[in-house]
Image (tube, rainbow, N blue to C red; front, side, top):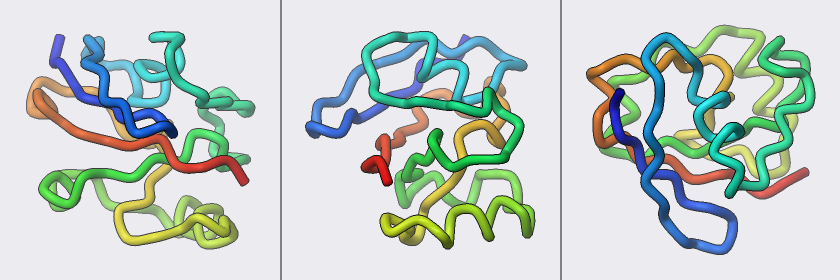
Length: 105
C-alpha cells in the first residue's frame, strides 16, 4: 500500500494510504478529508476528480487519453499537471506521489 500525499484546496497536505489496484480518485475520495466530488464514479464523464500532479511525478503518470484531455481542457482551472484522478491506477511505484486537489469548476 503506497503512501501518497494529497494537498487539499486550503493548501494542507495529508498522507493517504492508497490501495494497489484502486484509482487515485478512490484513494482520495475514500479518505473523506478532501472536497473531491467524483460525481461520475470514475466513468470519465465529468471532471470533478481533477487533480494536479506534482511536477516531479508527471513523467511517471500513464499517458493521457484524448477524452481525458478534452474534459480537462474545458476546466477553467486546467494547467500543466492536470489529470483526472480516476484515470490513475495505484501501483507500488507511486509511493510518495504528491497531488493537489484542483479548485471546483
